[in-house]
Image (cartoon, rainbow, N blue to C red; front, side, top):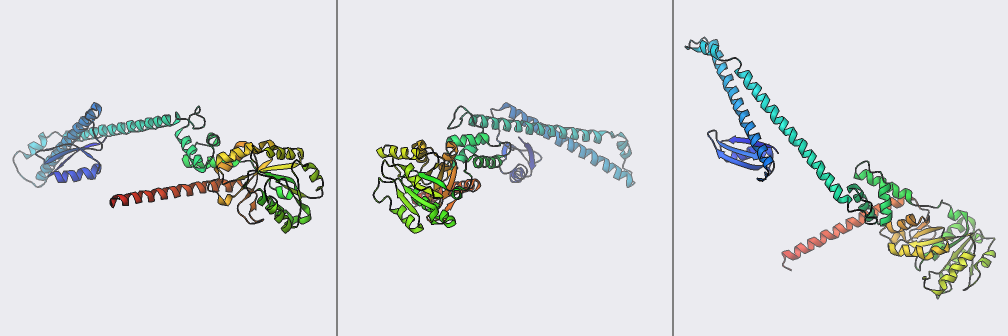
Length: 443
């Protein structure tokens, strides 16, 4: 709290002095007319009449200012008197008693006045420093109280572990990206929070990046037997066509063969047969309750065998038979779960649990070009430790097929979150503007 006394010829000038010295938010404590003019006492903050400590501080500062002004006036008067006496002597005036007044004037008056002024200024400076110190202590206590209140809210996923204010901000940003609460909690706890919020967020993004499991690049070039499983509409058959086309470009059509287990839907083979005809590769169909292992034996000479499966629900009676065929084919068959990034987080989780008994070796993300959030897909890979093998981002064969890069995925996830937040803010602004216009027109 800063309190000061102002004296001016009139109230208007006094208020201008208050505004220039203490700012536009200054509070007028008191005002009165004196012999000197209009006296105004102003404070830099509102004074609560019930706060005796502030009132005492106000009275003390006013007393110091009045004493300081009195001392300054005394010093000026003494200095003016001595100066006039010296001027009179220097001019050779013979005013009676002049020399005697000079001799009788105490030589220590000015020095005493100056010492008094210095003492009062030092006391006021000390009071100001004490106030600033107490203010900083109070601000620190308020920050600690804020952190305490936030920390005792805990994590939405694990309420037993409290979060600091900075951790809660990081956790919320993870939610904006779309991370599952369990993974967000792990990311926050593993991030470096020694710096400010932005530095901590960069650390959290690094944790997200390092926590994503990836298969070594080279799935396509390595060949072997690959089976794709996943829900209907995930893009399994199209992804098989992309993998086959890429392999045919480098190894020729005789190196690839298609095998389909989908005998449960009408025209289920049409798309795969079209790929086989265009690429010039062999295709075999395994009938219901057939022997997949025997079919694969006839294709030993192929460098790459791609198996297409039906996206059956777990309640479907044919699902268990299809699962049994994949298991009986042996450990040489690598099974990849195809996850469309356009699905909700809960759907992706259920798909993982649904096809987990097949013995999954990794996952493939599809429809990256159609999704608006990567958090759900990344969360499934991170929480299940199911390594990501491939990503598709369009209908073009084989161009829209890529090996994943964790850095690019994390950056893209953050960009999508920022774009979504911007869209919502713009929509909210438009909605508020529309409501205001409706109100103005009386609608």
